[in-house]
Image 1 (cartoon, one colour):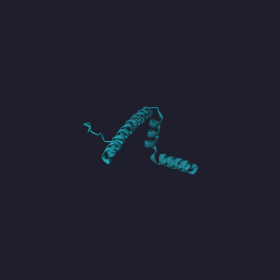
Image 2 (cartoon, rainbow, N blue to C red; image 1 turned 90 degrees about the vertical axis):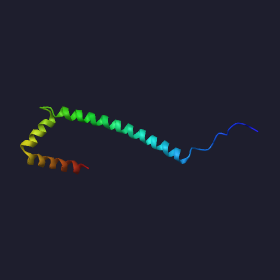
Image 3 (cartoon, helix red, strand yellow; image 1 turned 135 degrees about the horizontal axis):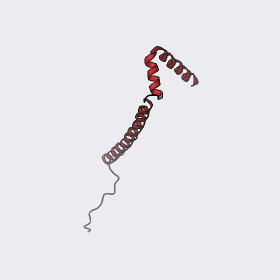
Image 4 (tube, one colour; image 1 turned 30 degrees about the vertical axis):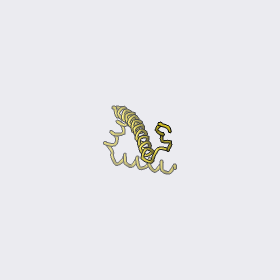
Length: 86
């Protein structure tokens, strides 16, 4: 007779696999969220730089305030031109 306790050799159960999968998904979501935060920060910085006086977004905003209908018409024509290329 042996006094050793037999170790289970079975595969992990369904609950253990589900918990492992959920933790993997959680880590992946965390990594993706971190990447998105970094991308949003870069875009925000670029937009803030472009809004400074004399920069492109500042100029477009001023033109739009002065002539909103003309700006809308130009945007519409630009949209048509882009849509026809596809």
